Image (cartoon, rainbow, N blue to C red; front, side, top):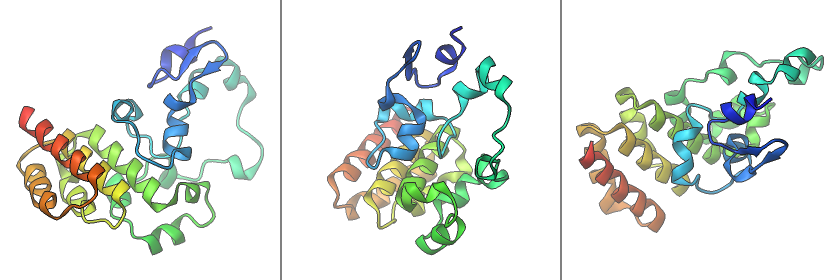
Length: 189
């Protein structure tokens, strides 16, 4: 069976029983502490914490059924389909309170907001532009970098204005590069 190989959004399952963890959405969104490689961002889709595509398509996994332990049970809509705009606006105190008893706290706020920005860029929803523009002011360079990328993916005049406004104030080289790249992406759309 090759269902998991065929279904993997980032081609992380390179052959039966072999995963390239550097491409795995669970690794990219949960374990990677730095910048998500730009070429991997589109494949992440709207996942912000892990990925279960391979498990969802696996016929063997379906036979096992849900885990009996409460800590594996679904934690509700907040985790399965979070409001991405709300996530990218989240401050440190809200993050700590909302996820204090959740594995999501492992990503830290900067990691979760990075992931939310990538997901918003993949939705290309122009309603996200104000929240992403605000994220360009975040104290975390990692968040600013990914917010810039997302704005470049969404495009439009609002995204352009936000990026142009942030560029003169930005001092982090990676974020400056991301803003410049995002501006060129907006120009091409």
